[in-house]
Length: 255
Length: 320
Ligand SMILES: Nc1ncnc2c1ncn2[C@@H]1O[C@H](COP(=O)(O)OP(=O)(O)OP(=O)(O)O)[C@@H](O)[C@H]1O
Ligand SMILES: [Mg+2]
Image (cartoon, rainbow over all chains, first blue to last red):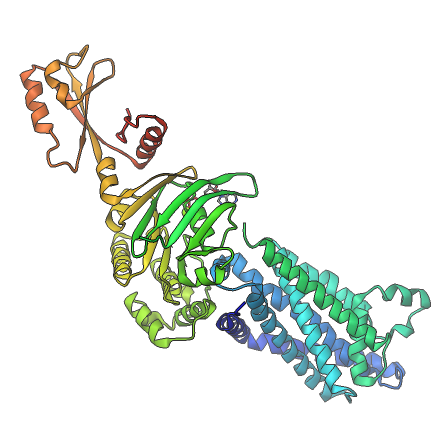
């Protein structure tokens, strides 16, 4: 099979151009909300919380905060990107083009993940204005960043195909992902919870993502890094299979 | 000649069980303009969309340039350009970027020269930096044509290219299509209008209720479709057509109060003068005259009936 590289690049550039048109709001929103989190959690509340595993509370929440943004932004960008052509009808062109799901997914998901990673970097830079940040394992940090951005962009892509309306598109990030991220230890260590809740929490997949990502910064983790990495890869794999199936059957794309 | 598109025994049922296409067999030849003529809901868009890969085929087989459209979709789709029936475009993009996007999507290296030539030929050059949402409907349709031609396809599908287009633009469209044919592009278009099929096509396929009723050279079909009826309202009802008028193949209607003459508008002689002379000689007087032209709907009824009757004698003429 010969891949259509021109198509990948066309889709990728098209999506990046769409993001550039909303550049200001894309950057201003995360910068402002990150700053708010630091003012509220870091300074006001954080000053009353002792260090967690030897890391000040303000620094402790940085990886969780990045993860929270990464998840919601990846999902909303990718889902919007593919939902829009379905909504306007321009999807006909994609369906009639000499491309397989590989090109389509690489283009759309690549662009959404790129944007998430840029946002992640912006949040990191903003955070460093407020607190001290050290990154113990930059390579692993980057790896988690890439894997998670890609996985959740894929998830968003699936959502954008599955959803029949804009409402469903909003509901999933707001009602499922954000709560899971909050309850998954974005702002606290699992070990701070009572034992029963610790067990319950382990069913939350986001716990593994946050734990692994935080480990790459401060070398402290709620679950083992290997487990975090495996969970991330499993999630990525499941999303890939679903996308492959969607294109194979034409689910919601071809009648 | 080897067909460039070959459709064999294609059937398609939608998820709701509706059978939109029934055992379609169709060949389209390189370099021709083929018109699919049919009323609303006939299955024209469904047929086109299956060839282009937008709708999943049901049973049957389609090859383009000898390649199967499902198995070798990369090869077949890169040869095909499609202008859809609906005006769906990206509203916030500029004309230039959306046309360039299409070229890339279809696997071709960027070529500003080609896009420039294309936009100039479609009178879109001075709009190239405009956002699509600022264009009129007719211009949007041209943008869609430009997008379909961006990858220099050898086959172009135009799904109702002149729907909602004014007379001026319709003429432009016809010229664009003819110019494309000159350059060797095979064109398949759909239309509701006989006139349009007549103006543009080399061959016409008539489709109704998911079946191809007829595929013919345009001139042949037009001869058949171009029938008219002359209806004479008689003073005195006739019991039967006088023997002297037999050669006109007249029919009596309304219990002998009307005499119906069917003729071909394109024939060298319509026979009307001769008929009227004969009538006055026979002493048959009439007080009113009507002429009926076959509407598309009647033509379909006629064609379907003709297919159904074993000797095919019913003809495509209008029915009373
Ligand atoms: N997605 C769908 N699901 C179910 N039925 C459909 C679908 N799309 C089209 N149909 C039906 O299939 C039939 C053929 O539709 P099609 O759009 O191919 O007709 P058409 O010849 O293009 O008509 P028009 O001239 O109005 O564009 C119609 O009866 C239509 O209702
Ligand atoms: Mg149609």
